[in-house]
Picture 1: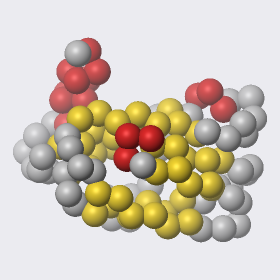
Picture 2: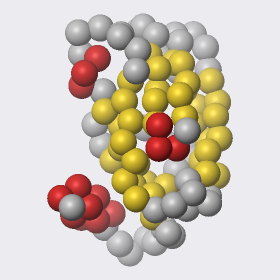
Picture 3: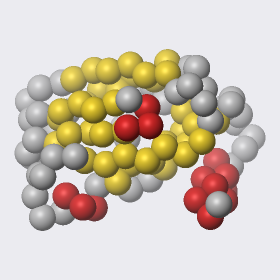
Length: 103
């Protein structure tokens, strides 16, 4: 996860109790990253960089969104994080993410 860019259209994976560092910025307008399940709400302002650290307390699927009315595509900026007990190289997390979305 270090050095990776979080996309608003794909799922992201975090391990329980591992510290994740979010580096948040914007290119066009002010956005606000909101992940209520992780206790994160941070503004993304063009030309500024915001850093926040989180530790996921339990496993599950966490949803978030842009909570700033940033333009006509505001409603199409969902975020999702799959919190797992441990990360393994030999597991396809995309299949896990899809199966958890159904339940």
